[in-house]
Length: 38
Image (tube, rainbow, N blue to C red; front, side, top):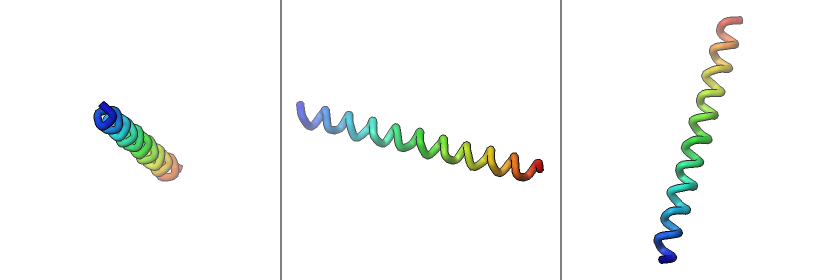
């Protein structure tokens, strides 16, 4: 039971980290586009 909960927590953490990285990459792309337009 404990091993299952730990696995779920790990998957949640990796999922959140993946979302965070995606948001950061999107932010960088938007900044590059804005700086390129100006």
